[in-house]
Length: 634
Image (cartoon, rainbow, N blue to C red):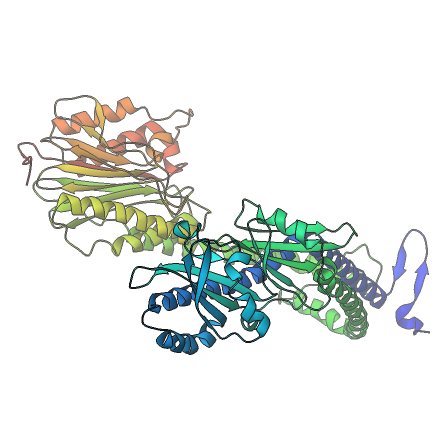
């Protein structure tokens, strides 16, 4: 009997009093037992439920390997037969032909060969090679007739593969003409038995090659696996419309088989494999039994470990008591996680420990965590601002400026421009969501963009290709970084500074809008629609063209400019934006001035809501100066 000092159990009302060691062992044993039971139940259930599909695929993979080996062997034998036929000439004799046959028969696994020519209603034998037995010597001349090959079929036939002679022999015939123009046929007997030794499939798998009508060409069966019921199954599988597959078959005697099949490429042959279902599932049943034994062993070991740990735990009760005094002195690093309502040895210690240190430790940890997170966010925001343009663009023919208003410490909006020769590339994007994760995605996009700008573009065609390739590159960067958790609506444009032609590619983002000289209406500079970057490997992006003119004002903006609400839950109307831009254009304001006027009007409309935007806002304004005439062509 265990020592009652540690293992006593007393049932009283209303509480059940157990020693700490008893509770520890019971809890660990129960948890371990429940976990093992759940694991074994799920594991064995998955094995049982998925075993059929797994084994079918496994058998099909084995058959596929053997079928490819057989197909390669047939193709090589046909090429060898065609080579022999090309060397044949009745007038020149067969010495050279025989020498070639002797050199290549072992490499191509050819057992015998025969050279024939059509003669009336039969074939005349010109030469036969390597007749090993008298029966085979008699069979070779009669081979065309046995396989249904007649001189009448000769003009319309090419490569012929015959029916079954023996378990491992395939007759392959090719037609041709001698140098004198006489029609010839060369038939070789391919021996698959040497090749079968190298095929990696189960020893109890029966391998067959059958024609379209179900007739066997070759059968390689393990000992004791010949079965007459395969004939009907072979015919049914040979008529399948699929190139390959697997299914379960049951014989009239009730024996279950797993049948896999694969059609040989470019030939009227199909490879079929039959495997007894009991043999296929034998390993699975063994694995399930091993799971059960392993689970029982783990449970026993776990209970033993629990007993050892429980002895050590009760021996350290005085150490826990001393820890409570250290907590009272200001050391808040320890905890005693035990409910106060439990009547065991540590209940009083746990109450004092939690009351003294719990709240204080939580407050200290929360304060330190908040300070650390704030510092990290400020660092991240400082780094993110370096991804954006630091100054405006001025060329005399075109001016550009933009800004970003983040809704949180880190934004999900991104924009950038770069000059490449006589072209100016402009991109603006809005990651779904905002915060740190969105900012990290903009960093990946910035890196991908920088790899694309170290070049000069010389023609509009080069600019168009660059724009499409850049959008695809940024799409790949988005896929790699977000892994499907976010997408990036983006619009990209490249402006020919000589002609004013603007090529735009839109990927699920708002297209840029143009305010023409003397007009009070916005004109879209690109087509809308398309899928956002990061939604698939091939983004739906099309390039559209728009020509900027003198005194045109163009701007790009993310959704935040139009979707943020003021304190009355109203969105900023486009009419106010239009009025601000018209005045900026008429007063010949620079892009920076026009941008600042728009943002000031936007903040005034939002009121107090401007200090806590619901979405990031990015605004980029471009302008063709007045009296700046762009040429129509280069």
